[in-house]
Amino acid sequence: MRKVPRVRGGRFSFRRILVWFLYAVLAYYGFIVVALAGLRLIDPPFTGVHVQRRVQSWFKKGKYQKRYTFVPLERISSNFQWAVIAAEDGHFYQHHGFDWEQIRVAVEDGMEDKRIRGASTISQQLVKNLFFTTSGSAIRKGLEFTITPLAELILGKKRILELYLNVIEWGPGVFGAEAAAQYHYHTTAARIGREQGARLAAILPSPLRRVPARMDRYSAIILTRMGQLGR
Image 1 (cartoon, one colour):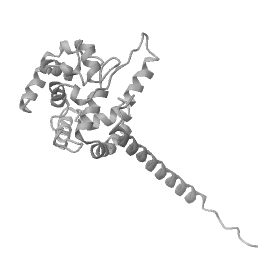
Image 2: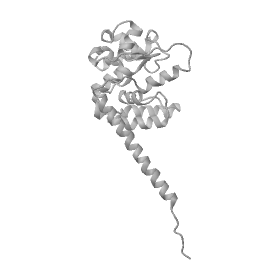
Image 3: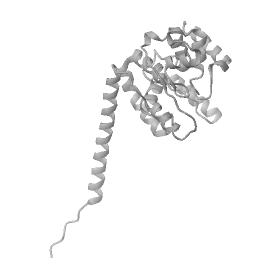
C-alpha cells in the first residue's frame, strides 16, 4: 500500500503568516513615507489627536468646538517659537530626532524614583500627534520611535517645527499656535510676546488642565531657558 505523503501544514501556515506580516509592515511604512512626503507641501486638515478628541467628545456632555487654523511659521512670533523650543526640546536644532542625553537623564531619574519621566523631542511629539493618539502604550511608543528618523529625513527641521506648532493641543478643542493665541490672549500668533509665549508653552505638558494665567513658576523657568538659548 502506498503511503500518503504528510503535508506540513504547520510550517506552511507559519511561513504564509510571516510573509503577510512582512507585506503589512512594508505597506504601513510605505504609507508613512508617502504621508510624510505629502506633508512637506500639504498642511494636514486633521491629525490622530484631533480625531481622538472628536471621538471622546461623543461620550461627554457639552458641545465640542474644534479651533484649528494653520499658519506659516513666519506668522508665529519668534518669541512664541523659542518659548516652545525652550520648554519642550532645548536641543531641537542639534539632534536628529532623539535627544540621547535627555533620555539618559530620564532613565537615571526613573531608576531613583521608580518612574520614567518624559524625554520626547519635538520630532517625536509631532509623529505622535500626526499618526497616533495620546495613549501611552508600548506599541505606540515603539512605532513612534521608528517613524521619527523618517520624519527628520523627509520633513527637515523648519517644517517639523511649523507642523508641530500648528497641530499640538493648547486647550479643549484648541489646536495650533494661532488658535491658542486667539483663545487664551485674543490676539494672533504673530503678536505673542516673550512672557505670553512662555506661559503658553508652560501648559503644553497638560493642556486640558492647565491655563497660562496660573503658570507663573514654570513660565519663569522657560524664560530663563530662553535666555540660555540666546533668546
